[in-house]
Image (cartoon, rainbow, N blue to C red; front, side):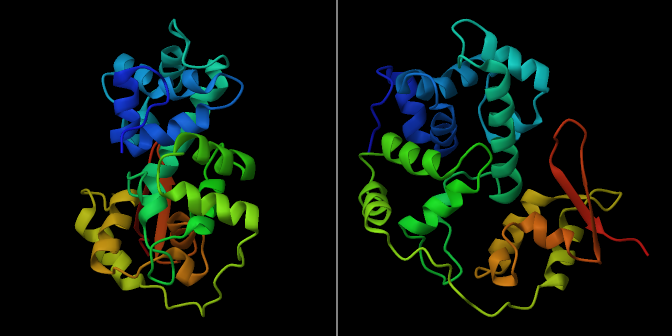
Length: 244
């Protein structure tokens, strides 16, 4: 269903077609009119020539801040909000395989589609989002999406927010190492995001929370058999089998 938020057809089309744009609009929706906030992703896209988590996260911070400051400004606080958008992009790239819609579509630890409470929990954990931002931002952006009714009912009715209790499953270390090997460069390094995507394809039930970790990066960091590094300037996380 098409969104009509900004009053600008191209900007609204981007919000409708690109979940990451919608997510960024939600993040920008603070201390500026809602229409201005959700028009931001289209301004960024037009000025950068592209708009996806990898491109945004990998951009030079100063150059990206300049994109925000170009008139008309993306936000009234261009410097700080540019940094927040890049942090959000890195999170989507590294923890959600570059797919923002996975935040509200990826099955939960019970194997079922996420309900309203789970979607809110995931949004609240994103950089720049909190309890109020996650709930009100989602409702304002998606008041014509079917998710909204569920979110509102659970927010107002105090739905069961207790996390599912489930015994910790065995960490598939061998599968992680195989994925790293399949995706690695000549030095053995592989990007965390693609490794996560491969694990999800090979192990449909794989979820870091099944193993007691909120994020894939947290799980991998706990493994003695794997080492991690992040490129300078907030680049993507890379992992490889630890050399002993």
